Image 1: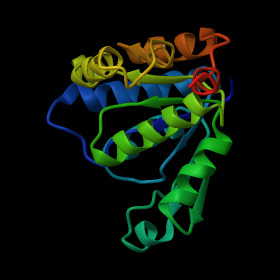
Image 2: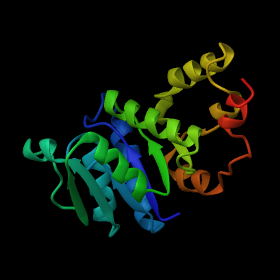
Image 3: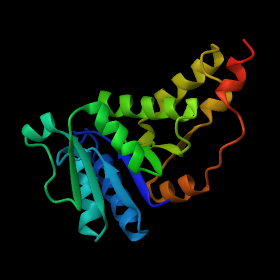
Length: 193
């Protein structure tokens, strides 16, 4: 595992712990020779983690759509900044480059990226580990919602296990690297209906 894609907010959030964990994760990635793949922004947690990796002699590839680049939110101090045509192309490129995925706190964009990548893993389009950096319990309600989806029959328990709940930045790399997939496939269940 070389490249870790981090989905996170273009805001800093209201609690200092969000920025602190982004800085810790960025330093930890650089120290462990893991490259950051992310959305290419210089603002919010996106900018914080990118700066932390770069300031610790790490490698960062940002992928940003041209309309956001024109709004001057692109980070020009990265190892590489790829400018693409659309949000869809951005997500596709990040998924191609990444060996694993982590969602830090964020808003709709972060949630949408996380949902899409989990769907791709569930459908077998990709087979890469996905985790939440659940800073200060930020994602506790989302995890409860996923449990509710299982209880109500909309999410298979096997697919609920696809997302790792990780509490601290230092745990991210070991948890992603040690993750294994079972032999379950959603297609097995769909062929029985």
